[in-house]
Picture 1 (cartoon, rainbow, N blue to C red):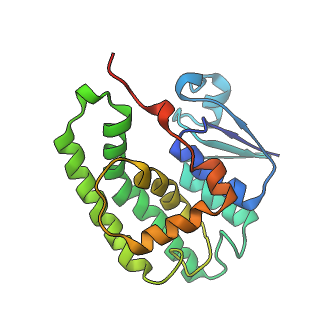
Picture 2: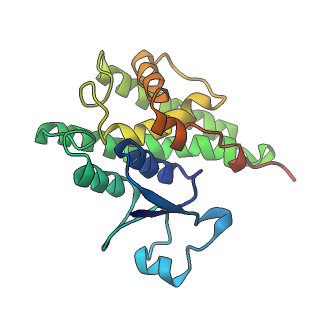
Length: 213
């Protein structure tokens, strides 16, 4: 049975858990990180010296970094599904995964952290607004690239959709201005129909919200 370490309200854990859910894999999730602590425990450090979640154990295999975990699960258990059969399609899925991590997410985390993880009195609304503008610009690129497609690779869910999809729930539920994104909104609506997405991604993050003392 797979074992995965990480608290369920971490977006990176949610990415891995969504992949597990889509693949229907038996698993055990162990709460660590945040209020649960445990990242400095010797057993955890032996798996991931970087003290970060999630961490996946599959038999003798240990994988850390959420996108690496998604790729591992897709290649091991999702051949022809989350792991596209075509090398070209896998490369495209890979490209969107890396784009999310390196282009979209650095700005998105500034918005989410600024509006949710920061008390109202300490928020830099100017910086948040500028970051949100850049997020909208990035999502316009995705929207134009999707066109009539349902997913980043054709019309079937692949590993390329999972990091983006985990971000979309938070993006569409934050109290922010958003540009018109018809293709992205359509993709998000389709994800909300997936049981694994609703279970592992689309739930309240209010327990992360910081308040003024």
